Image (tube, rainbow, N blue to C red; front, top):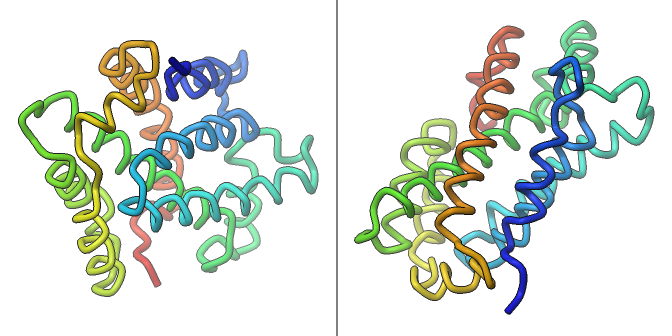
Amino acid sequence: MEDPVFTPALEGIKHVKSENGEMLTKHFLQVCKHILPVIDKFGAAMTLVKSDIGGNIARLESKYLSSPEKFNLLYSMVQIEVEAKTAKGSSSCTNGLLWLTRAMDFLVELFRNLLDHPDWSMSQACTDSYGKTLKKFHGWLASSSFTVAMKLAPDRKKFMDVIGGSGDAMADIEKFCTTFSPLLEENHKFLASVGMDELKAS
């Protein structure tokens, strides 16, 4: 059997914070990248989410690589954009971090649903987590596309078997939700402090 797909993300979360407790750009983005193989296991239902997450990771990573020392801390690129009054632009890194964090909120909520509602179908778990996270920020078109995509969600048991590999899928999911949620919450608090947490899709 393969290793559990959550293992690289769980390992990566340990390195997201610096010794001073600051969020490190490279390590935060790596954890998000490690979630992409998990999203793959959802198949067609998550094509939109994967493309959105991948695009936002690429945007933030490109900025980071342009000056790794300058952008070593995740919030530094946002602070520079806020000062330059470019943070609200649709192609800004601030916008990228906001939507990346929201997409991760959706996934954490989805995994929580799988833990808390063993009787729910995958489609039900997806639709509920979408309603609690992304939906309020999406316009009608994005919301409609999402609702249709959720109907393509895979069979729950097959999904759990695939992501578990040779490990304990439920234990990995619980650990991921518990350790990653506080980091996402921190992103929201920071984005709210610069007036950027409530932006809707343009």
